[in-house]
Image (cartoon, rainbow, N blue to C red; front, side):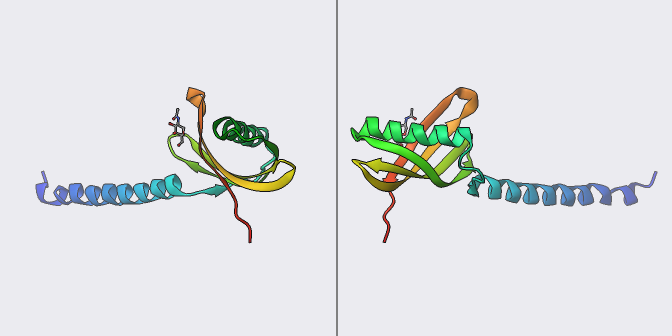
Length: 122
Ligand SMILES: *[C@@H]1O[C@H](CO)[C@@H](O)[C@H](O)[C@H]1NC(C)=O
C-alpha cells in the first residue's frame, strides 16, 4: 500500500474544512449583524408590529399616540427578528415620527418593544 501518497490527503481535507468554516462563519456573521430594508412596509405583519409598538409605548409611558403609518423599516435576524420601524403617529393632533424596535420570536408567540424614541428632525 502507498502510505506516503495517502498521507497528504488528510491535510488537504483539513484545509478545505478550515476554508469552509472561515467562509461559513463570515457569511453567518454578516447575516446576523446586518439590517435589511423592509421592501413592503404596508405588509400586514409590519403594520401589526407597528401598531403593537405604539400601543405598548402608550401603555408604558401613559401617552396617547395615535398610529398613522410606517414610514420605513429594517429587520435583523437575531434568534428571531428585530424590526426597526420609523412610525408616523399623532401626539395630541401633532404629526410626529418615532423609531421603534420590536423583537419578535414567532414560534414562541413572543414579541417585545425594545425601544421607542422620537425621531428628531432638523
Ligand atoms: C421588554 O423590553 C424591555 C425594554 O428593553 C425590558 O425592560 C423588558 O424586560 C422586556 N420584557 C421581556 C418580557 O423580555
